Image (cartoon, rainbow over all chains, first blue to last red):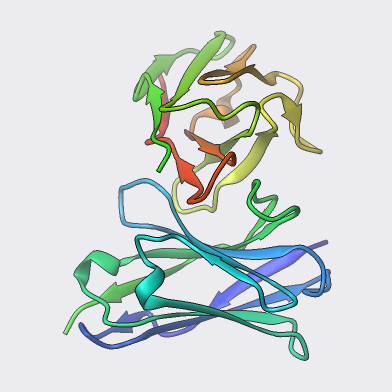
Length: 118
Length: 107
């Protein structure tokens, strides 16, 4: 059974860097593509980007200048860093598995709420 | 970016009803469309991929159709556990984008 679990601070100050980690169990991170997706409270879904085990990435152009996704194969984890956050970045952040790279997501983490506030 | 428009934005229906949700892409996306179900406080759940392929474990009352710019998700006989918000998502080109969602409510 594939499981994903997000972890990281639930509160980040404006202008600082948001950092989240997704731990994958039941599957090797050396297969598939691994994405971050977010959802502001009461709103729709926005794809942030993905990483492949080789380190190859693809980011949403609207966020690309502020986002870095990395992978740690030894820990079966991948991570998200988003710099210079504002209140508009307050959202539930999900990690998810993409079986083919830019297609759809078949396994999701439960999500973690990150609030940007001083 | 490809814009995805869903309608209606909400629908009230009764258990046993047939429900159809429409998703329109701002340009042709072939069959590169997925549908998700999301319940409050939960992550989205994949229902349909490549427009009409049923994800493993999803009940057969869910079906998807369409290609190009117009797509539909149909629930043939609405069950109590189907009351949720449904999202379409295009996978034709980057950035991957979602529709605004359709909330299926109890009538």
